[in-house]
Amino acid sequence: MTSAISMPAGDFFIGPMVFGKVGSTGAFRAVDNLNLAVRPGQMLALLGKTGCGNSTIFNMVAGLTEPSEGTVRVDGRDPFAEFGSLRGKMAIVFQGDRLLPWRSAIANVEFGLELLGVAPAERRATAQLWLSKLGLGGHEQDFLHALSGGMSQRVSIARAFATNASILLCDEPFSALDEATAGKLCAEFVRLVKENGKTAILITHSISEALEIGDRIFVLKRPAEIAYDVSFNSETSTEERGKIRARIGEVLAC
Image (cartoon, rainbow, N blue to C red; front, top):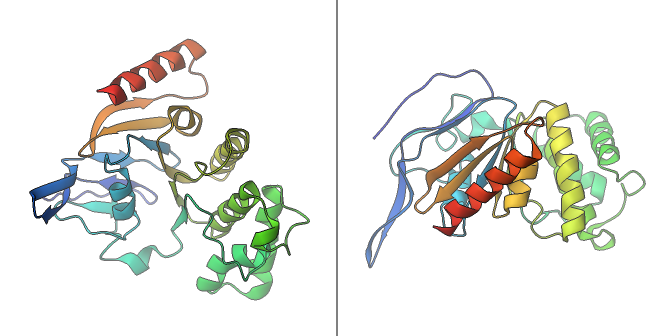
């Protein structure tokens, strides 16, 4: 099954698709008949139990995996077949910080800019700016062993923002942190995404995190079909958010 669609720059789209593999026990499908589109500036949380296919979706959007059927388009491009054309347009924040231990904090933030060919003076100034925005002024020359888990993840987030990519892909970026640190960093991340007009797609297994991050939530069931699609904003009442939380719990319990 295939489909095609034309969209404004910054949109991300997944058409009708199946991603699967065949093992000794027969056919296995990780993603089945999934349709979703994300508009520019939207923060989408993909929420589901372990094994529901969200990581497969993430890998297809990032261009790391090709769907066995169907269409994936990011900014109108096939991220797998046209991987190089999306260079600098997407940035990834992983569950772990993925920092290079032989580099200082500021050198880690500069790394993506180096790959994009940015001049040394400009990339140093940009890295300094984002470290400061993320509360790491004074820690620019610190190495990984001198940083806490929360500080390391701030460096990772600074590295993503420094490239000025329009789309941020986040794979459980706060799950390895303690609850207090994760909550604070999550709130800062949301603020920076909104202030800088980014589009963000976040994978999470936490209902609270999805409600904090997303202005739209897709709750997935296995294989990755959308079991519940809900949008809300800053004006959504506490009562309504409570109803959304309860409905998500019901869907995940099925």
